[in-house]
Length: 376
Ligand code: PRF
Ligand code: ZN
Image 1 (cartoon, rainbow, N blue to C red):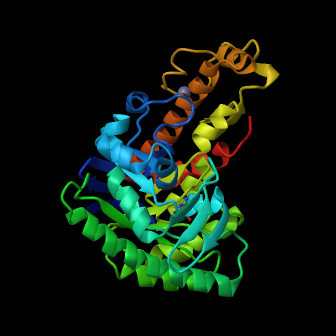
Image 2 (tube, helix red, strand yellow):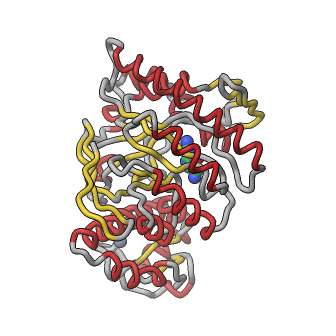
């Protein structure tokens, strides 16, 4: 259940109730693809990093250790010892971005596993069965994520098929939830809007999937080759067509600047590998801009990574030490950067919520939008 608490222009401050706890929105979801945030971060760490929701992947967990195995171990929350909500992505995106030799038909997609090349079929029913076994809080619909640029006719046909797949997802998940032994009988389903950069297709598709009265709606197919300006234009066209009483999730986005721009256009929920992926290369997000800790200028710098940060890394260690660890390829170097970046993203969203609460989102936006994108 989504409750809208406040608005500032299109920006929304809300609360989303789930069986695994209430999510304060706008919110960021931390990406734990195979059940862990890359960089040796466990569910126990996440507690001190202001994390609210974990995102796991159907595709990866199906291949390894297998969703049946996760079900036997009590579901994804129990398996990872994470007590909060978990959203599982449907496999749609991963099949298209990771798997080789895929073949798309009305029934679903056949592809070769990126682990051992084994041929696998996944359609809406398979994706729902896997997500039901994982027992996530929120299951995502099985969709085709089209890369940009895309042809108009192809996009139309693909979106029509993704809409038909959505009906099948809903029917299947409703059935699975009623079965005895379901890991999460209250599992929610979010639909995914597609349509490349064609706003007419986007709007038509959104109107169609809105009819299903799902628990939330996502904007997919963005940050896949188009410019940031084009992405903002699509978000502006789609959000007015999204139900006001449901969460709005922008999939796989993005930089702190992208997030601030999307909140301003009415988005409530985000996920991105950027905080952990960039951290593993020594790139840290700070309140003054992005820092590369590999840079030689940090060799003798005894200051914390970010002077305005209270994360476990900044409270205890220096830039010089992290620089040394990264140079020496010590795992701790990566881990400290990951802890900081995860904390930074969750704090960014917390500050956005606070600004909305206190009616000063506009000035928060103006104060931070140019700084956050800087390289320092
Ligand atoms: N579909 C799904 N997952 C996704 C995307 C999508 O379009 C994206 C696009 N940025 C990220 N993750 N199912
Ligand atoms: Zn920090």
